[in-house]
Image 1: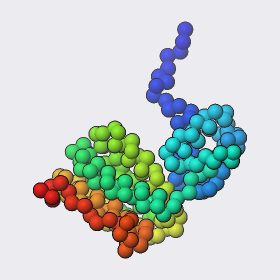
Image 2 (image 1 turned 180 degrees about the vertical axis):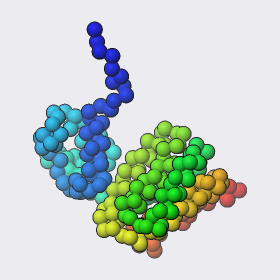
Image 3 (image 1 turned 90 degrees about the horizontal axis):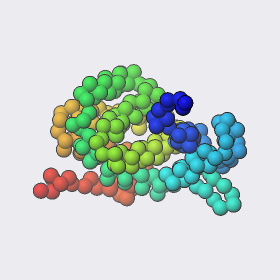
Image 4 (image 1 turned 30 degrees about the horizontal axis):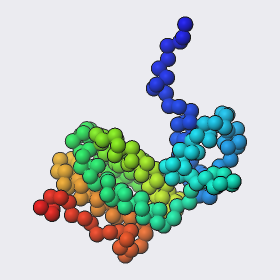
Length: 234
């Protein structure tokens, strides 16, 4: 008689390895260019090499790892063009996603996020700021009723966090953080207003400002002109 288990609710071993390695890459614990040695990783995680190999292949697919023939896998480096491409994708998708998610976000979650922002404004903590940042963007990432777009955005989120870690978190740019906090408040207030167009433009401007903080704001390629919404064109 087989034991009754709901294995469908448990992530596979390769998925767990993938998430573990991805987090280490995103947080900078595995540096760009660092070699990923299957034997060492398998020994450290107390598992066989098979799920390690599968996870590395998934990480290569998602742009976190490069596999070099006859040399093995290394953590992918982040070029200036990579950062520009990530932010262009965010600019194209996130304002629309935020507007689409707005009706599905519970008011109590918005109020809780606003309360956290108020606390950080009074008593700044970089760790609290990072948690708040993830919470604000997670509101529309998590409540978006479009699984295809949600999957794309979650991958983009991991890449954008990695870029920001390399340029902001690692250097603890406090001024950059404080500017972002003000914009997060504006986003939450836009959600609470129930105005979808206001949500769209507020998120859009936040991403443009975020791009400018990561690179010279005079660079017109990385900080393209704010495109008009369909409603504004009409």
